[in-house]
Every structure is written in C-alpha cells, then in structure tokens.
Image (cartoon, rainbow, N blue to C red):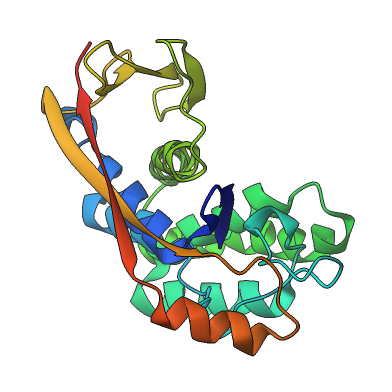
Length: 238
C-alpha cells in the first residue's frame, strides 16, 4: 500500500490502483514513440504491482501498529515469484518487463543479489523466446519505469506547489522529464511526451481514522468497509 498521513487519518492507495494510474499515463504516450509490443507494455505497466493483496492481507508496522507503507517492505522472494508467475502466464514479453522491474527495485538489497542475478542470466533466453531484442525490451521498460515514477509522485501527493518543477525520470528516449502544476491547476510535463494536448487520469484511495491496529485483520476489515475516494487530475501541454 501507499500510505499517506492526513488530517482525517490514514489515506491508503492500493498498489493495483497505483498501477492502473501508471497505465492511464502510459496509454497517452505519443503514438509514433510507442514500443512495437505496445499492448504487452501497457499491460505490464498496469499490472507491475498486481501480486499485492492489501484488501485481504494488509500488513501493519509491528512497532507502531500503523499500516505498513510500501517503502517499508523489504525484498520478499515469495512475493517476487508470485508476481513473475502472473506475468509469465501472459507471455514472455510481459514477464521480461516485470523481471526487469524486480531487478530495478531490489538491485541494492544484499538479500536479493542472487535472485536478481538469476533473473539477469535468464534474460537472453527469454528475449529469444519472445522473438524480440534487448533494445526493444529496454525501451518498453524505461517507459514502464517512467509511468511508475510519475504515478508514485501523484499517489504520494508529492507534486510541488507554486509551479516548481520536479524531475520524474528518464523516458525511453533518454530525455529527462519534469513535472509541475500550471497556473490553472492542471499538471504539465516538460518536454511533453504525450499524444493528446490534454487528458484526464485518476486513482482511488481509502481513508481510515483509526491510527493503530493490534492485528492485520482489524485493518483488513476497515479497509474493506471504507468508501473509495476518487482523485482526478488533468494533464495539459505547457
């Protein structure tokens, strides 16, 4: 979960909702710059966190009793296996992108070193089976990572105020993109990498006023009962 503390309590965004937002952003990419395996790239972007099951198995911080934010979760081999199995069930190309994402996330964690090394060793075989190239996979993954980064900025409410610019990530063309809020309140990305001059995206959150829980089941029950709140944004070309 992506957990934000607000005046009303914990505002929580499910990882799958964050993934859906990333896919909404990805879907607007300039048509002429879209990867050849476009649908595969879009699906991998939408589902790169789909092994999370917060509504049935939420986690709490044992020290504070509060809901565990995604940044607090260490490398979990069982979780990565589950995510990879879901991805490879769709196809080698989707699996390749998810395998790269796992390596990107955990490359600096000592406990994940062997696991990531094994994924890297298998990549050439998977590329051959997918009938693609390393260059194509790299371009698709860089787009996934860009959309993931932008979605996380939005879900964590990190958009800078007063028109200040914030670096998002490098896109598949190596360009560094920046995010800012225009005077009319719309979000803008510079340089503009999207097909339409304006589009809308959204994600859902759930707010819970109780701050501490003794058991994950108590958090689960409140999460399942909480109303969904829609957060909508308009992107416009600067």
